Length: 149
Image (tube, rainbow, N blue to C red; front, side, top):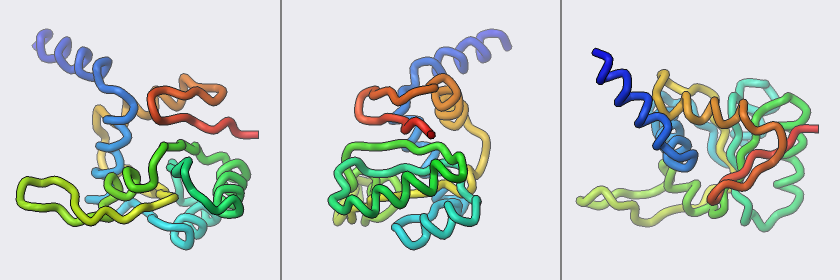
C-alpha cells in the first residue's frame, strides 16, 4: 500500500505543467466543460462560470487579447498563456484524429475556457498546485500565468 502511494507521489512530481494542462483540457472536453472561441469564452467569463482560461500568445487581434485579459482580471479567473493556437486547438479537440490517433486537420483556437474540470485527477492537482505557487507571471517551457491586477 505504501509503495502505491510513493509511486503516485513520484508521478505527480514528474508531471510537467504542459502535460497536466493537456490532460485537464481533455477531461473537461469529455465532460462537456469547455468553451472554445471568443463568443463562448466571453459568455462563460462574463457569467463567472469559468475556473480557468487558456489564451494563445500568437493571437493576432489585440482587442481580442485585451477583452479576454480584462474579463479574467475583473472576475479573478486564472489566465494561462500558451505559445501556439494550433496546439491549443488540438488540446481542446478541434481536430480530426487518424487511425493511429494522431491529430490531422487541426483548427487553431485562440481562447479556451474551462467551465467544468470533470473529475479530480492527478493532472488537475498539479495544475492547481502550480497556479497557487505562482504569484507573479512566470514562463516555464511554453506556458505562463498572467498576473491579475
